[in-house]
Image (cartoon, rainbow, N blue to C red; front, side, top):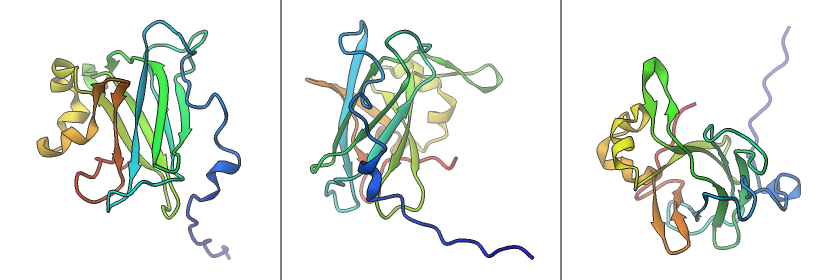
Length: 173
């Protein structure tokens, strides 16, 4: 006889108790050559900030080395703001000889969600690489903008909209 399944639990609001750490947002050491800052806000379906989300990024390019760990984790603040400091990714070998455009993989956790949501950050200034990326090509053209970080005065901007108008594309993994 098997035991009954346990009901799902939401992932928060206890993220701040043990997951974030001081160097969490820094995949690259401060002052590392070629480092970039990516920041944005996590927003709910009404466009209001989510003050206790957790954003994780991972990238496979460039290779992990001294002063670069390829993984970052940042909690959002009261205004839903988050940031990571990393090295700009390069192209990534894809399936069947394809090449994926430079991107970061992203997981978002927040209260009220039973599971993390997964998306990607591509770069708007990589138009040629983005045009041939097989994953980005699988996204309807009118939704691709939600996956593009845009260069601004303080680095790249990438807002994450959990639902609603201009909802970020999330992938079923």
